[in-house]
Structure formats: C-alpha cells, structure tokens
Image (tube, rainbow, N blue to C red; front, side):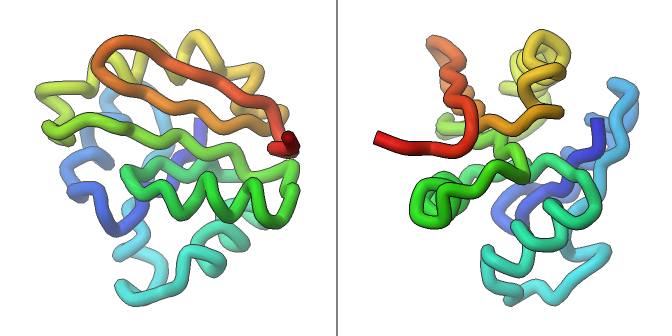
Length: 122
C-alpha cells in the first residue's frame, strides 16, 4: 500500500510502515509544510496514495466533495506513536486493503475500526 503521512503525524510513522511492507512518505518530504489539505488530497489522488492522518478535516473534505478517492485512514487516539497504535494500524491496512484500493474512509480508535465506502453521502 502507498501511504502519504499528513503533517500532524510524526515522521517516525514512515519507517514503521515501511518495515511492515508499505511505501510510506511523510508530506514534509514532498510538499510544503503549510500546504492546504486539498493539496495533499489532490497529490494522493493523482499518485494513488492513501492519506494517513489524525485530522478530521480530510474526512470533511471527502464528504464535502463527494470524492471517490483518495482513501483516508484517520486515527482517533490520544497516543499517536507507532509503539502505541502501530500494530492496530498495520492490521487494519492488511484487513481493509481491497477497500482502501477502491476508496474508503477508515477510522481507527482504541476500541474499534470503522469503514465507510466512498463517496460519503447521507
């Protein structure tokens, strides 16, 4: 899976996800640190990457634009370190790989994972 890490996540996620077999790039390696979320979303869509974030703005963008891509994984936990939640993230990516390839929003918290297929509509 190709994953772009949003600026609100530590760059340490990159090596962690790479060790799990994914292509992972922190946004700071490819774009401006103050880039708007729409720029990250457009880049991810054009380059077939999944956006990995802690920011709810990405799910709001998916909903507002009724976009079918890119997929977004949002982590909703207090401790964002890979040592705390990394195994759960990797397991979710493995289990939901086909959905992530087709277009979905995955929310991971300490209790459960939720998935919504794209486009997000009421």
